[in-house]
Image (cartoon, rainbow, N blue to C red; front, side, top):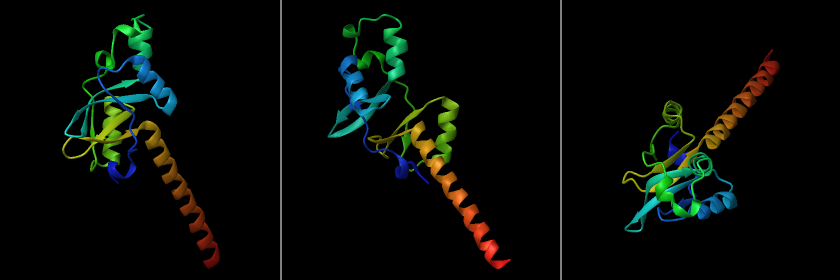
Amino acid sequence: MTLKTICNREVLIAQKYDTLVEAAKLMREYQVGSIVVVEEQNGLRYPAGIVTDRDLVIEVIAKEVDINSVTLGDVMYRDIILGKENDDVNETIKIMRQKGIRRLPVVDDNGALVGIVTLDDLIDLIAEQLKDIAALIGKQQNVEKRYR
């Protein structure tokens, strides 16, 4: 299974010059914990960084930074790890674990943003797979009862 099949195509995005308040309001409105900062070129959006709700708390509020004196570009994490649409989900999980990341923007072969995969998405996927395995066990037991 590839990231193309599981990534959320509705990604909350912003620009480097957007304010932290604007970003926080968007995260609250859409009930998400991150916003991907993009640069637009020829109608396509390329990830430039990511800002999480935790970044806002740890790097801005806890340090008592004046939220009106900085933009998303000032606080975004620039060295973001990206996944490609055709990357394997299991390999992606390993990379996310190794890097300690909970959110992975997904790009196409040209590097343009097409989606995002989050830890929550992966947990939902694994839960669904476990449900299918449990159903298989139950079905196998019923088949066995009929023939024995």
